[in-house]
Length: 155
Image (cartoon, rainbow, N blue to C red; front, top):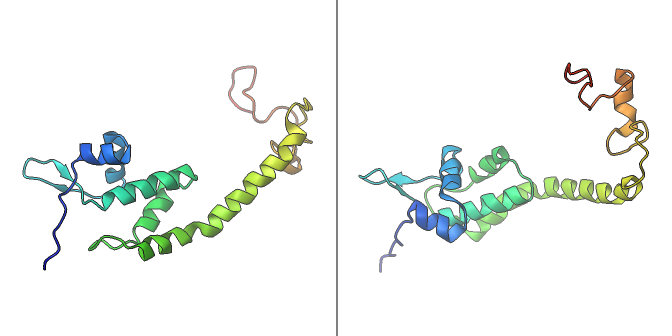
């Protein structure tokens, strides 16, 4: 018995199902993150598995992955069939070390924040978050991140 193909989704249906605005879906398509085919009337039609890709894109953005990295990983998925659980697992593992590093950085920020909030030190030479190892001090005296009060831009 032949497998019945489910109907494709319009941009509005994909938007409704995913919770992603149609404008964002068109942007994802322009950025080669998702694909559609065009009908004779030039309307977009998306395969149903595009819904999982859109969900993957949104979740990846939520954890801070840039679109360029998302595009690279999505390129590892098969084009000729609906990706399987194994396919998704394989591409998700691509980011494990990057996510672990981001988690470590956030934990370090959280742990150092107690020293900075409300301290009022205003010392960029001492601040481990704003100026680690007084890197800005090597550029000379005066503010390095504040607009020049004379209106000439940044120092």
